[in-house]
Amino acid sequence: MQFVSKRKILTYGACLLFLAGMAQAAQALSMPMKAKLSVYLIDNAWEQALEGDQDARPWPWMDSVPVARVVVPRLGKDMVVMRGVSGTVLAFAPGWHEGSVLPGAEGISLLAGHRDTHFSFMKDLMMGDRIELQTASGETVSYEVSEMEMLDKPELSVRNLKGSDSILVLSTCYPFQQSIMDGTNRADMRFVVVARKVTETKDIVS
Image (cartoon, rainbow, N blue to C red; front, side):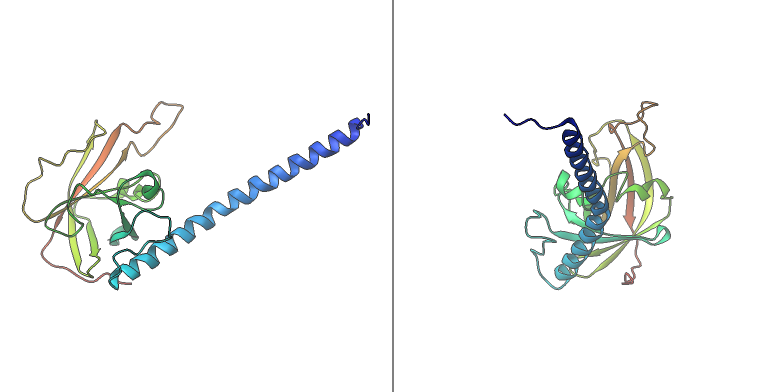
């Protein structure tokens, strides 16, 4: 039986730890690159959708397609909205709840996003802020923030909203400032912003 010296065991162990650390570092560095790549691919899919491709997926295994583009001029926010609100969709972009009307159409359209990524800007919205929405047909619809509300239930009800025109509802988890230490790291509340269509429209600057 051949014995391995203690020194060799320690050397092998150190090498394994070094390789494991390198792998973790490479993975950490790749996260920002993956985020930038996903934004590029989603933007590219949106351009294809504007050209008439109704099945323009950002990547082949993404079970969603872009349905709208949202711009908040005052805050410098510009993002593409994907179909659906599954965990996979919201990991890469804000999503459109398919139980509501298409963004830009007559009726109530519900958009959702994570409070710490795509919809983190909602904490800085103000009454009267403009939200520009571009539909897949190329039309631009202007909205104005008219209501803000914190809800203590995870379910969002928009049945009390009235009006036959286009209404945009943005929803995210609340509170925005989360901390495990003070017990606010929870997602059982919702911050909801209601924006109503205004008469004048303008093109989104590319």
